[in-house]
Image (cartoon, rainbow, N blue to C red; front, side, top):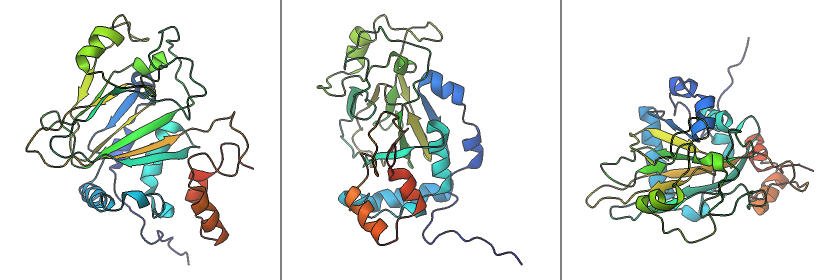
Length: 283
C-alpha cells in the first residue's frame, strides 16, 4: 500500500496555469530581454495574490523573516528556473503597490550583484553590444494580480533588445529620464543586435492575473497612476544566478543571515530556504 505524499501545511497550490508555463520561449526571452506570463494566474491564484499583497502591505518589514519558504508553490520555482536555470538564489523582494496619483518610476536598469562585473558605466558607450545572452543574471519578476494597464496608468514599459548593450542604465545616478528624453538621447543610434532595427520603447498593457520577467540590464519604466483608479497591486521578486567568482561562504549576500543561522540551529531550515540562501560557492 503506497502512501500519498501530502503538501506541507500552508503550501500554496494551483496558483498558475500550466499551459502558460509551457508556452515559455527561451529564445525570445534571451533575444528581447523580457517575457510576459499573460494570464498565468488561475482565478484562485489571482485572489490569493491580491489577498496576500493586501496583508503584506501591513507587514512590509517582516516579509522575509515571516515567510515560510517551504510553502512556496513549486510552480513559482518552475517560473524562476525557466528564466534562470536550475540553480538560483533569492536576491530581494519588494511590494510595488501604487495608489492613484503615483508618479511611477523613470527609466533605469540594474547591475548584477553590486556591479563588480559590469563592463559599462551607468550611461554606457555602446561598445559592448552583443548577441550573446549574459548568463550571470538577476531576473526580476513582477506579479500584477489585478493587472497594470495603460488605461489605468502605472503600466510597465521596456526597451526590447536594449539589454544586449550590457549597460546598467542609471542604476547609481539620478533618474530624470522620461520617454522623450530616452528617444532624444540614449536611444539615438542604438539598434537591436539581432534585427538591426532601431531600439524602441514598448509600453505593456498587462492584463489581470499576469506576470512579467525581465533581465537586469533591460531598461524599464513605470508610468503615472491615473486619478480615480484603484490601487495597482504589485510584487517584485528578484532572483539571480550564482557568481562563480564569489568568495566561498555559507550564505549568499542577500540571505537574512541571522534568521538562517537561528532557524538552522533549531533544525527548522527547510530545503527550499537552504537552496535559496546558500552561498554562491558554499563552504
